Amino acid sequence: MLKIAMIAGEASGDMLASSLISAIQKLYPNEVEFVGIGGKMMSDVGFQSWHNMETLSVMGYIEVVKSLPQLLKLRKTILKELLDYKPDVFIGVDAPDFNFYIENQLKQAGIKTVHYISPTIWAWRYERIHKIKKSTDLMLCIFPFEEAIYHKEQMAARFIGHPMANDIEMDIDSYKYRSKLNLPQDKVIYTVLSGSRKREVNSLTRILADTCTKIAQNVPNCLFLFPFANESTFNIMQEYLDKNQVPFSYQLVLNRTRDALKACDFAIAKSGTVSLEAALCKKPMLICYKINKFTEWMVRKKITIKYVGQPNIIAGREVVKEFLQEDANAEQMSQYMIDLYNNKAQQQAMISEFYTLHQQLRQDANIEGARAVLELIGKC
Image 1 (cartoon, rainbow, N blue to C red):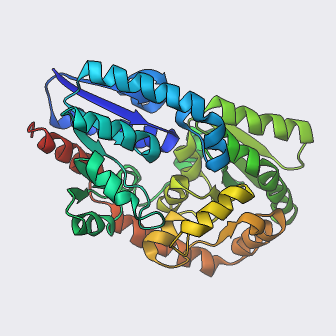
Image 2 (cartoon, helix red, strand yellow; image 1 turned 90 degrees about the vertical axis):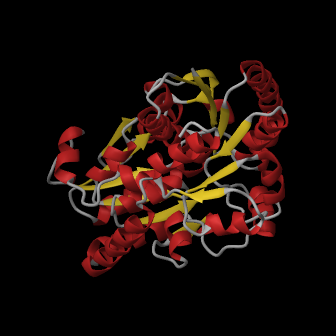
């Protein structure tokens, strides 16, 4: 039996890993056991999670420091379990600070290691690449420019495309997805994406609710859809909306983020993987993000790119308007979305950019990633 260990650190990693697992199962017809740390989507395709994935879902310097004792305890425990288990290969899925340590220790023990996806060394802290090289036998890259960066440092890497680009159809039938979610067909629907981590949702909840209020005052017959990947973040938003008796129509959905994006007319997305998901669903949108002042100060010392939204990073220019820190406020964000609603030409121009992006990233990533992993251990 082939033994594959994996650790995913948040909802986006859970999604990436589950698709990779399915592709490995397709390419390798013999029995495979998948174990480690993962979420619901991984469990749904046969993964055995030994610990709760949400423990790893922390963000920012202050938040990580507060959670450090728990993280260190988990790291020690899972490392011992993996060394005892002796997998044929270990795949760290995102969560770079946690996973690179695990990969380093396992590689020293003679276990092949893969990391999926590349951390943003092209954005900040490029020096991490030397630590990565010592820890990781193979880097799976989802953006086309990343492979050359690793090859320059004589490290094995492969651009496999982005799995979401294959999972998401080129042309979206919004009518079908509204029916799946029992949504009205005659509403202007905004899907509001506040994040998969509690602290992200807490930092954006009031801003997003106020933004929706102002949009509803200016866009007739609209509905706001709030999708969440876990119950803890779902409950944060539900409690806020109930407590404040917001003056707009809304619906919360659990574990249906992609359907919610495909069903909508517009998206309001926090920075991260979900902003790319919204772009691949061809939804006119904005990107927003807000972190505490200390974390912002630390990031600005190291960051080397102009944009934070993934659609903009790939394009090398601002395809999607970004509202960050002080600019992430209800006045500016709502006015932008109101103007976008009234500007059909701007909507179409953005959608056209998203089609180009989709075609660039559509490389059958799951199969290519699975093939690369199996080739590394001589099983393909």
